[in-house]
Image (tube, rainbow, N blue to C red; front, side, top):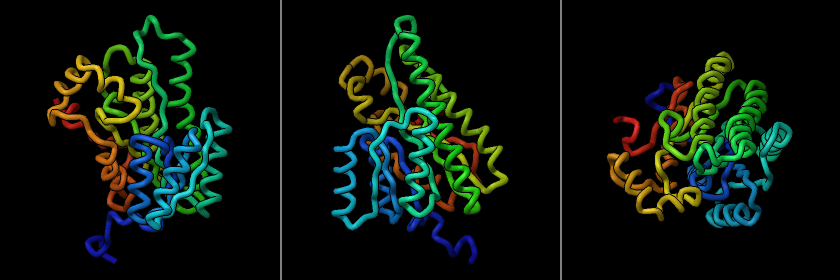
Length: 257
């Protein structure tokens, strides 16, 4: 079949694991993929939020299963991926969205907190990707979408650990894309700008911070989580088969300046 005859963005039947799926961007992506016909496996720490997500999906006749667990560390990460593959009878796409953050002046940030943020946002995601890679090689390929941030390419004050970790995740995206291209595995990043989520609620409510964000965002507003779904669909579909090691910025123009 010719490329023009295909529906390049069709993800019907794709088996997709989404981390950090109980709220914000992860929840929007999980529901958006289910609405577009994917078999979704949602992972997060909060059982009640995952129960609600699954109930909404199933009420609409959508396919969505879930697992409540803390992904911290190699063993937990590997177990989550294997559970997803078992429940979905395989795995086609891994979307790494889960992240932790503490906004604090660098000199006041406890070293243990810096280590925790770097460990989860970089090392845990590394473990998730490696386990997914092992599954993908068994089936001839797959796709990994790392949700980084506009802060993977720029910095802001009072958030050094998160900024460093997102830069690190972007580096992993590029390095693993090169290593795994020979196995038909595409590794790309989705970099949101400032999105209205529980994580950013305090900043949005602070007029000084919000004004600073809007000055840096040419579109002049905060994004909604649902606006991240289209980019994730592109990176998970056949439309991006010749794209790897790249970052898709959905940042309202922030990095264009």
